[in-house]
Length: 333
Ligand SMILES: NC(=O)c1ccc[n+]([C@@H]2O[C@H](COP(=O)([O-])OP(=O)(O)OC[C@H]3O[C@@H](n4cnc5c(N)ncnc54)[C@H](OP(=O)(O)O)[C@@H]3O)[C@@H](O)[C@H]2O)c1
Image (cartoon, rainbow, N blue to C red; front, side, top):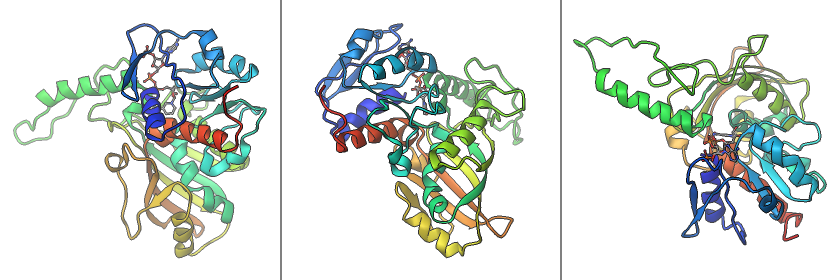
């Protein structure tokens, strides 16, 4: 899902691609369309990867581990969307609007962040810099495409099957059985599943841990307190977050709104307006709305939505590559 978005973005943003070499697992007959041509995507050829100036890894942690460090050591720029290296202290974890300063010419393996924290990472960045964010509490409402194409197939199959049967029975709302799932942990159609990733011994899910650790790294805020509940919902694309930010000091709501309004990469709806995943899907910016006071005097509440496949993955990676070009670090070797 991310790879196809990325190829489309490179074309739309006129990234100076001399030659595009797409790869896949090799299990099917994959191909991508680029500049009006259909290009076959065979199984990965490590030698062909090593000939590239820039490699985007949009596959899995295992594939990233197998190729990322080796390519970077040979001087290839590698931008990885998996979670394999995000928390590695030697690997820059970058959202260009927030921490492009973390890029270094000698660190050729670069990680893009988890798609759930990207929206918050962008939305809260200027507030954090200007005032200081001490604590974040959030609940996520995550789209199924965040779990890849097999999960999306599962949502569509379950929805089709249920749409035939789940009509109002006698005017009463039907109850649905839990239902079997293969890709996601529970049936996702017409449901909400508070498990994204596997659970760790302390009861947190892998996703909840990633959101906290990656946000601290991207904001350079090692003591930031984060508590999160990550929930998968049956939306297609666009992760939504209900977030509560406790600031270092009380600021007028108008000041917080002014800071959010000029936060790079963020589009703020004012006066109670808000984005939804369907409105934000397919769009580049992070969207936010429903800014209001939280429970404590220093707490703000905010609703945030961003396209997990775009700013949460492919667009962020394309923007990192553009930043490398701007700095003249990336070019034909
Ligand atoms: N989906 C999101 O919203 C999102 C957001 C941020 C980060 N990410 C990360 O981005 C990466 C891709 O996610 P996705 O959602 O695009 O997954 P996906 O739709 O399941 O696609 C995975 C891709 O990896 C390829 N692949 C699998 N095994 C491979 C192998 N051994 N060698 C080469 N290619 C292989 C698959 O090829 P075939 O086509 O042959 O199956 C497919 O093209 C993951 O690391 C994910 O964590 C995803």
